[in-house]
Length: 271
Image 1 (cartoon, rainbow, N blue to C red):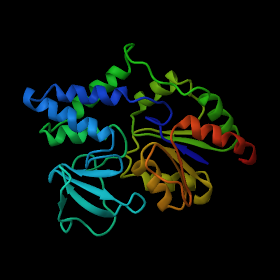
Image 2 (image 1 turned 120 degrees about the vertical axis):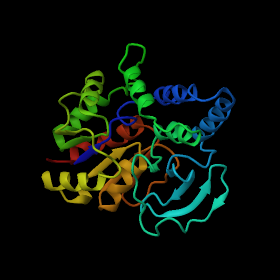
Image 3 (image 1 turned 180 degrees about the vertical axis):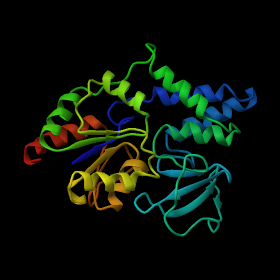
Image 4 (image 1 turned 180 degrees about the horizontal axis):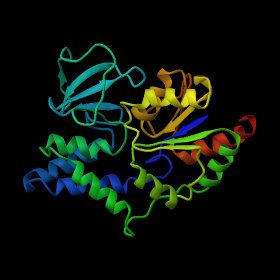
């Protein structure tokens, strides 16, 4: 069985993240806007304390470096990268939410962290405005050539499930634009990842009567899609950079790369 993420996984591009960031930058005083832009660009290049794979404490303005597979804190840093005392945080796996301890698992969360650091308390209106922009004619999804055909072939061989944090309406619209409606055996919108990821994956394993080691989670968010799967004994495919393949973990720079790699395996699977 395969479990797929939607946003950032089944289509490509980062223009919507930049649009989200620009909306919030414009809300700041003029003297802060250049600093916001500088920090955001450094984040995207992986040159800032806040980067994909970290977490951000919005109340303490602290950056938590994590072991991505155990969610344990390995270091705590200030916004400028200085080391901080980690004793205020748990020694066990760190719990994430969408407000205080935020997992920076993909490009949506970089503008969020930057905005919160510069004093914007509520990012939701800007997120919803970005989603409206993405639904307009002004925005074009970067489709992945051949992916709908590949997913249909895969779904004819094994169960496939879509698990996404997007709501039902947005999910249906995106699947329509991507020519992927009706492909997946099950679609789970408003999934609440990463907090609910492990329980959702366990439910799907039981529902489809698969052993964890025969289930693969594919996504561009290390903490949402991959780390919870690995902790359950599943396989994970991370679409992105800065992660090395290992036991039960596969990394691909793009979905197209992984798709080409996976095509020859499809005939081996049986429902």
